[in-house]
Length: 533
Image 1 (cartoon, one colour):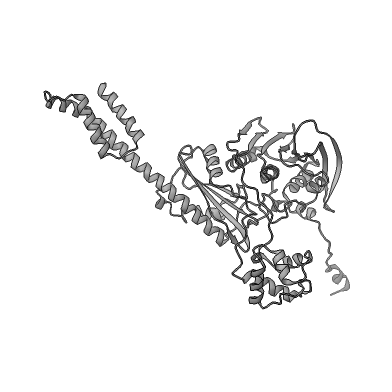
Image 2 (cartoon, rainbow, N blue to C red):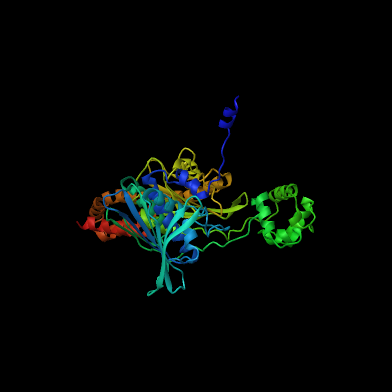
């Protein structure tokens, strides 16, 4: 091979910033086409708005305005909230630096990657060239702050085009964000409306208003005042540890002994637990953790994961909805005849705590379909895409779940809501649209579905008994007038009349036919009317 050929075979190398990477591969974050990107932008801005409110116990007031810029395929999307606001020192990086976030903590939150809103900003920048505009006023602040920001893609740094501040006249606190992107409303319309509807189901404590490009105003009022308890930041659990996490924890620790380090760095580890673990793992409790080699760190991480006597991870980092909120949301939006919700006890996978919730709504205005209407949520986020690849579909699918055992035959008017909340939801992709088939999560979903379905079965059995009783009463009603007249004629002269016989028949009917008293009285009233007629 010639020297020229050898030179031609040489590779060139360069580094790529996070923003450069997602600029080139925006599809993996859900920005694959104009319709999906419009939906994704609305979703990211609404999730940020909710995380800035309900996490801190604030009842959300969320406003969404989607405007089409005349003569173009560009859309201006504005979302405003009444949340805690953003410290102005952090606004540029919060909107102009990919993988910069306030959510890199061990607690449940809707967003966690530090990517979502920045992807919307980045997509808007590369499709329209327009910056993001941010107005914010933190709680307690006397000023409103304004920023106009772009992203320096090569350096992954914010470019501040404009900034200003002024004295605040009213009491508003929160954030208003405007992003301009290329979109396709005709194809995104149904998804966006469905996303907002499903958000309203699990946030009945929120007031949500949306104005779409067609001029339609969609309003979901607040129907409950209860806001779910906010999640609290917790320490990592020993079962979720790996070598790199150990290195990070040790680097930031001032502990001088391994025992002190374990007690300080991890949840579920007290003095006695640390001593028992170190004894079983045959590790020196007095060794300085900062001196551990990679081989010793690998051994320590493996033993921490294998030790069975650590307490389960704390659920303090989680914020489940609770049956009351789920039932209120399902009743308000779907208007069923029956609704039930179940919240399971906290469990863990790989050291990460999680809670599974399932709600079932039946009848009413729910359409009869060949399979359950599945409403999937993870950390209170509606998941609209990739349904058939989600663990929730695997559980509720009629091919895998025996609905007939619970008196449900398809087509049936039934909706199933599933909610998984965790410090680490095992999404299948960065777009956060489907959850992986983690055995522990699948088991809890199945158990919750069975528990809720048993309550549905009890309701359907009672409904069936009531309908049977109605049929028997109606049959009785058909013949009662003739029986009363015949008996009156036969017993005439024995001191009886139609009223006596009617009362006697009613007493017999009450004993022989078991039916709800209110229903019975209503039917008897109809009986009297029919006799009089």
